[in-house]
Image (cartoon, rainbow over all chains, first blue to last red):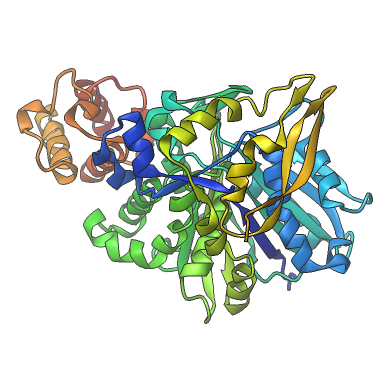
Length: 417
Length: 81
């Protein structure tokens, strides 16, 4: 019998600001008829004083505070996954390791595989934990990204989010116990979306949508070849998927039900509402977090579905380029407590609501936040007003600039109550 | 299966997803987006026509097809295999 391995605890950070998607549609002159299939309510917005380092630290810091120093001292592996890299050599993880105050006896890595990367890191970390090479060791996997899209991205702009998800991986899983050996893979080379430079993304919407859906089908087929009794319609009580926009997950689920259960879309609605919709509550309020997206969907599921009697969750992770994995795990009442401790709904509700003009005014500076410049000064006072509008009070790491290629950060306070 | 059969299945698939589209618009050098289909609806049309034709074809095969006529050509070729 393999000892249980999985996610012991988690936390998310989705920024201190958001814009309602209808306001962004109106500001850009987008067709409101498209809102129905987008299924997005709000999207998180990064401030110019935020970057993948601050997002990662702001996701993990409250988690480590909850865990306490004894558990934190057992973190022997830190992996940041991001497609928002800052330097071709120096990793985001190196800064994150410093600002989290982790032990120096720690493997520190950054990984890149578009939005799939956190899942690859989670599975490798789980394998390491399961190996027993370092009994009781913990791994901290943080998926962290910021969005660079502007009006050129058209309907993708309202779907992109900002933030990070921190996962503590170990042999006392409470959030998600991975089903050992239950995974399916499907990967091939394609250019569906990419970030060729530090200030812009490129995307081919149809190519990306089709690649995602092909990967969903084929990674599940590979899963089924390893787990012979697996049935898409009956094996999984709940489903959480990488969420580029919530409507895409609905389209994916409809396709899967048609393909693997012979269910036409109209008849799949109840099943979607029961097994999938709870996973979309948070993603529809945040947008695509990239690497952390599927784990925000998992948190949403655990917070909004009744898992008290125990439930098997099917998870689908996809990254452009492309690579994918369908895997599964168990959640139960302990998961509800562990995810509930993160207070995600309260965090999302506390974000300051931006007007379109405020959003558009911030965007040019935010789009420069990954630029490798020798010296930059970001005056902390410049965004103090926005930080004060956060509806809760918390410590927040913010970027103050770059000095001789070394990024600089300081702790600030968000919220005024 | 004849070309007319394949076209009939495509028309039925479009009607399933976009009930208001006039049949005479479904063809020629129009792309599905010219019929008013957004990206999700384009997926659902392709999935529906593949299901009706009993084809197991990756969606990525449809990425570069420039218009409905090319889609019918492609579906005819796959259906004859």
